[in-house]
Amino acid sequence: MRIAILAFPRFQLLDVAGPADVFMEASRKLGKPRAYQVQVIGAEEGLLMSSSGLRLAVDASVATHRGRIDTLLVAGSPRIEDMASNAHLQNWLRRQSRTVRRYGSVCTGAFVLAASGLLDGKRVATHWNAAARLAAENPRTCVEADAIYVKDGKLFTSAGVTAGMDLALAMVEEDHGRELALQVARELVMFLKRPGGQSQFSAHLAAQTSERSGVREVQDHVLAHLKDDLTVPALASRAGMSERSFARIFRSETGTTPAEFVENARIDAARRLVEDSDLPAKRLADAVGYANVDGFRRAFGRRLGVSLGEYRRRFAR
Image (cartoon, rainbow, N blue to C red; front, side):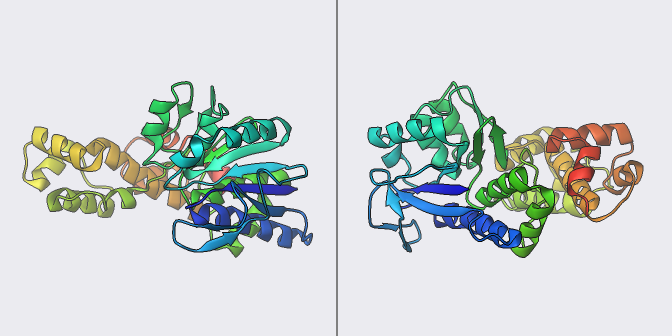
């Protein structure tokens, strides 16, 4: 299968190297060095400088490329706008999209596909910091702002940078099954634990975003005491604020409500327990602070986009 990754000047290096390593490791595990053949296609000939300053030699340009492509991915770039307005590039992408088995983007590469009309009516993912802009500029596109990756027919799109490796793993699993994808993930010291609909943020990452020490202290308390009373009144009291002020400041600082943060923290912990143990649902619920197992199941499905049973089937050891 020929995998072509389209890259531009100032491209994000890991958007190219990450998926390439996944596909190459899959070939090695299969014992077929040419099972996946990765090539980099540049918007122009010669060496491309990445956003980090490292240079990459392209195999061909859109003008010189020949041969059939199985999978076409568009890499992201901090300066993606420069390429999104390139009419020649848009025409090339539209032509390729009609013949490839699947196509997609990593990170902000979605903006180039959008400019080519290839995201119209589609569900897509991109970097969390660009999701709102992609949605505003492309009202016919359904942007799933939190998703790690999204598959919609033959279109695959992923969130930022390392999520391109999750996307490539999903493609390997689609091509050759879950066992090979697990082998590749282990070899690359990756998690094959992130279903596409899982949030780009864990609760622990979210807890690093607040600038107010009082809010951070509350977040740290939540993460360390999931079985405690974590209602708004209890958390506001810990922060030394009125409930109204606490809720307002918390949302302003973190972009989420206290209740949403607590639920996310509890389900994040439950997800890890599912991956590493065979605890039944009732004990899982109790371990992360849910008195009602049905409420726990509903919250799990709401946060991760899959049921508890399906998550266990796909991601438990």
